[in-house]
Every structure is written in structure tokens, then in C-alpha cells.
Image (cartoon, rainbow, N blue to C red; front, side):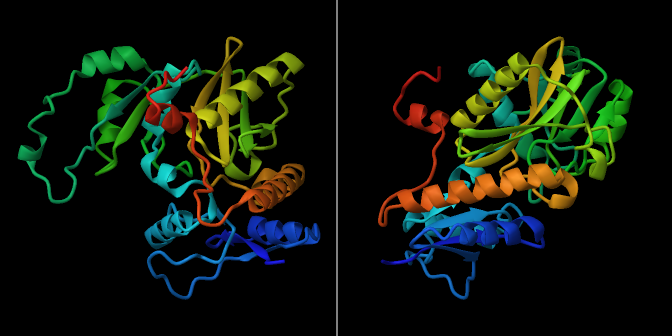
Length: 319
């Protein structure tokens, strides 16, 4: 029997990649072995050598992202789909959710404060100056949050109390394209892992705590609320097509609003998520990677594609 290799591609992260490899191998599935990915050359159209690659780092390393696209086109099941990950952003996520009945905060996109490299004022002949700030502020309301439309890690996130505060803080953001988003004043907050579009773990989360204490929250959702949130998490990932993602939900007046759900390399460090959540994510990720490896077929596309792409390419209604 030919061995099918499951590889994990990662950066300085250690606790999850090491535990993932050990967990896959501890299951002793015939014909399946896991290891950290090793790349010593990259030639077009050549198979990567891996049936499955779990990607934890290509958002920060453009070389890895394009290498993974070649791996995908030569038959590797890449978790997450590198083509979709490249195309996606947080603003599009919100736009799509308004069309598929997932509650999201009111959100506007704001052009960068500074001109992008190699552009001038003439490059923006289609953009009104000034923008209709009154309409934007009335739509979103204050207080609000401002954050980059792509990226994560709680970097460059600002709380905005009024229009004057907005212009002061926006002047600090350089070439970043920012979202201006309604504040959801929540009574409960959850971070939810979703793996394989079917396995969900809902974790109490307190984003106002220091990073290492955010999972030390103790909200007590009813069975009905748990089911409601599970359905939202599954719906989001069905449309986006992520194999591995987290969704953050803020509950206001009994309604879970999806706050942040474009996290295709989510935090899975034992020190931040805690032992129980870490155990769940390692075990579930290992089982799903094995499932993908057993289903992988050489010479064909083995990626996961979301309903947005599938329905759009078929010219089918989104809902």
C-alpha cells in the first residue's frame, strides 16, 4: 500500500502542530502518516508529495500561498482552500452574510487614509471627496469599532466614540483599508471552532479580557441558544467553504451577531485556548485530516469549495 502523507505547514507555532502530528500518528491508520511539511524545491506542475496539507501560515508567507496552489492543482487536499483564502476578506464576508440570513453588525468600508504606493490623487477620479460621512456615521452609529478589512490578530482595532474621534484615529491607519462597524453591546460572547463544515465547538469568550484570559469566561447558554449558534456557525462555513475556521458571536437581545468569521488560521495554542479546548481541536483536526486523506484522489481537485462559489458558478440562487 502506498503511504498517504498528511503534512502541516506552520510558522513559529509549536503546541498545535506538534500535537496534531502526534495525534494523527497515534491512531495508526493503515497507509496514513503525518509530519511537518518539508519543501526543498518548487517546480510547476509537480506533486507536493502530500495527500493533505494543513495550512497554518500562508497568510503571512506569499511563497507558501502560491506553492499551496500548485499543490492543490496537482491533487493535494489543502486545508484551507488557498484560492478562496486569497480571494476572501472580512468586508465581503459581511456583505455575503446579509444575503444568506446571518445577523451581522452594520458595517461600512472606508478607503485608506494614505494613498497606496504608486498611486496619486488622479488614481481616485471615481471616488467622491469628501465622502458622505454623515450618511456613513448615521448608518453605523457611535460608539463603533474600526478595524482592517483583511487580517486579524486584534491588530489595528480601534474603539470610536464620535466623528471627531474617528478622524483622529483614522489618520493613524496609513494605507490600511478599514471597516467601520456598529458596536454590538453584548450580554454573552462566544468563539466557535468549526472543522470540516460539520464539527462545532462553542466556547465562552470574553474579548474585553487580556489575551491570555479571554477563554476564562463562563456564559451559560441554554440548549436552544447552543443550537441556534451551531446553526449559524455551520451556515457561515457552508457558504464560505472553510475546513477550519472560527466564528465569533456576540449575543444582543437574544440574537447572536456574527462579529468576526474570517479566521482560516485560528488560534489553537494550548496556552491561550486552555487544555479542554486544545484537546478538542487537536482530536477533531486529526480525525478530519485523516478523513480527507482517505477520500483524496490523485489527479483531481480535492479542495473544499463553499456554497457561494458553487452556486455562483452554477448561476443558482444563493438561498
